Length: 281
Image 1 (cartoon, one colour):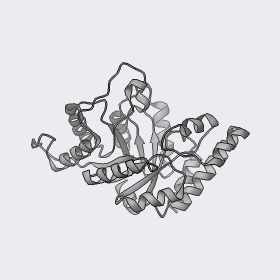
Image 2 (image 1 turned 90 degrees about the vertical axis):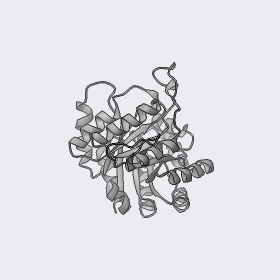
Image 3 (image 1 turned 180 degrees about the vertical axis):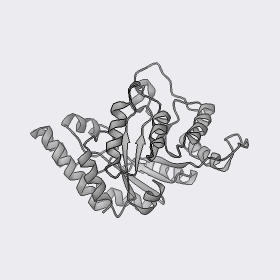
């Protein structure tokens, strides 16, 4: 993944870990998806506060089968000690690429009584991974051995405040940033000009109007009018218009940004393959 990101031709595919112990469907899908030419799977860490299999377990299985992984690592369900312990565990399991996130509010998920943990903020988490790479922890204790983490952070491209926050993440040591789903070439151009790091742009095409409406309600995501209006003609039109818009966007921006992050709503292997082909030019 590091080499493909350096070359500016990186494509990663987001996958959700199973809600239970049955891994067959998940592993069957990832085996087929790997053949589309993606550079890595990006494995989520309990999005929306819903209980799923631990991302490090799934990531380890993928790494062991010869696949590249970018694992999400969230801070708000771990205290300071657990964060450092889990990071060392990730290194031991061969998981080196991490997308560092604050995490979704767990009280909105399966267990409303759950509280967020805020022992460290996102900038401290970034700094911690860099300290571990140098062989020390947050307290300055010398560790026996060094990690080799390659870390990214999140970015809302429509927020000036978040763009300034992104600059702080770069100063703290992130190696790349991942945007929220984007359809606008000019926005991709702007963030690439303003931020001095590698940029992975998230892309999403939808199976139906329900999916599209969910994304359109998320702050920081602006879906083109043509896709929204296509919902009036039914789900097939949403599928067609959104995929056409994504392919056009990828073709227009593949020489501007450093790669693309396909979000987990996308399951169509042939469409994933087409995105990879266009992205890699």
